[in-house]
Length: 168
Image (cartoon, rainbow, N blue to C red; front, side, top):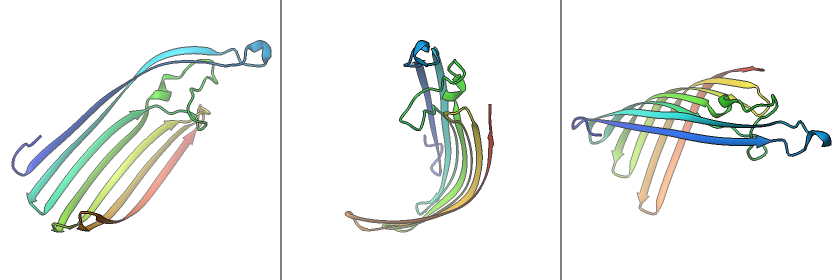
């Protein structure tokens, strides 16, 4: 969405709907839990960016994303029924990213970029543990494509994070 000749806005919205049924494949008489449950859950994600292009060679941007997603088990999917019921929060794992960056074109075939970012992520793993992490960092990139068949990219990320893990 072009706001002016120098400012552009980008907006992304997404709604995910999950209808889930899970049950222990072993009956209680065979040593299974006998647990079974169904749930319907929705998760809303959104992304916003504002880009300022003061010249055709330079772009500055601000991005803010709030993403929701489902978390399955590490064995290829699955729903946690350990408590006997589906926890709807398993489908609302979140990530919030805020980023401020700049990109500069040295010539039509090369560019430099830098960004400062902060990302907060929260997941509920398959065992029911809640993991939260905050990562802050600096990202640097260089891109060069001498012709249409060759692209060279180099980037480096310097980051620091704090993790908090709790049990239900």
